[in-house]
Amino acid sequence: MKSHVMVKDVWKSFDQGRIEVLKGVGLAVQEGGIVALCGTSGCGKSTLLNVISGLEEVDRGAVRVAGYDVVNESTRVDLLRHHIGYVFQFHHLMPDLTLAENCLVPVIAAGGSRASGMDRMHELAEATGVGHRLKQRVRELSGGERQRGALVRSLMNDPELLLCDEPTGALDESNRERVFDLLLDLVRARGRTLVLATHDPELARRCDRTVRMRDGRIEDDNGA
Ligand SMILES: Nc1ncnc2c1ncn2[C@@H]1O[C@H](COP(=O)(O)OP(=O)(O)O)[C@@H](O)[C@H]1O
Ligand SMILES: [Mg+2]
Image 1: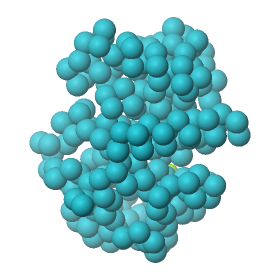
Image 2: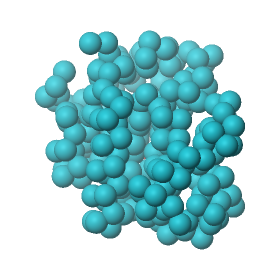
Image 3: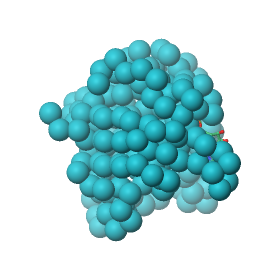
Image 4: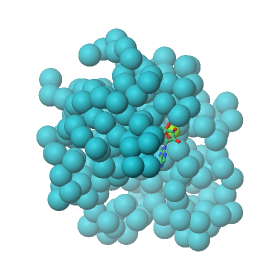
């Protein structure tokens, strides 16, 4: 099967090289793969997801998603608009827009109409338990509602690759289970690829494969 995500010998530092975070990371994820990216806080999970999505530039190395060269500037925006869904660690919803407006942003950015996104938005919002919050401004929502809203937004364009950064960190146990079940169901049913950063071993266990980051590298890999 083809690699959907291919990261090869990627190096990434911050602060003019003073903070070295990724030190030769390699990772290949097959199409339809469901991968948990584990490791202690600060080991570089978010940085790696940012690198895969093209939001963060690399110092050196190669990153390809669905055959696109992510390091190459010109394909990056296209990838993000049409191909990748991203649930950020800190939701990144726009606080003064309603949840519904936030969810429609990626639809419009990808060239869709408002109307075309409505049914999907309602369906996803009901399933994640924020259907009754769609008309509310994001600043009025709880942390958990924002996180669930961010999940809805990330799924609006039915992305082939979903990157989730601690997507259930702000949820209580029952909502965490519910949202994670939904996430896995959606991804599995449609054969989508998921890379999930988490420090929750329980969530990692339910993925098909776990990779652990340590000291700037992928430490072990039970599914490569
Ligand atoms: N923009 C940045 N500038 C400086 N240091 C950063 C930046 N982003 C991340 N780092 C540092 O890189 C390391 C890895 O961060 P991160 O990828 O967020 O780890 P994780 O998601 O595993 O907790 C941390 O030490 C963090 O402080
Ligand atoms: Mg992180």
